[in-house]
Image 1 (spheres, one colour):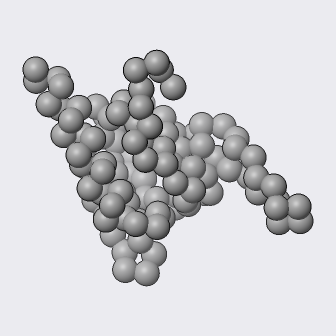
Image 2 (image 1 turned 120 degrees about the vertical axis):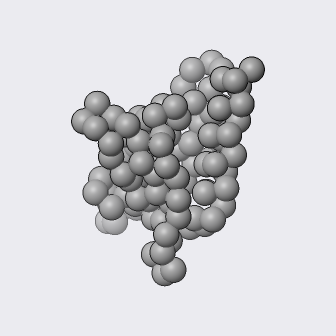
Length: 111
């Protein structure tokens, strides 16, 4: 993370296409680090950062699901627009935090 970057929210979760990992929201970006676990000895290691999206590239944020709760977002990437769906514990809380973070980013840019 950069010196002026602050972690806002972080959670172990699962992304539909990428798999298990750690979702991190900062004041600058959304990142997802792959996680590998072994049941035999209860170890877990954090692998590569497989998703690193600047907040300016996020075009839409929403939540979905009743039993399988997910926070979702669409972002512009080098491959075009992609949608990501993360199974998080409190999708309503994540959505509120996500939207507030995006509002703060846009407010800073207009100042």
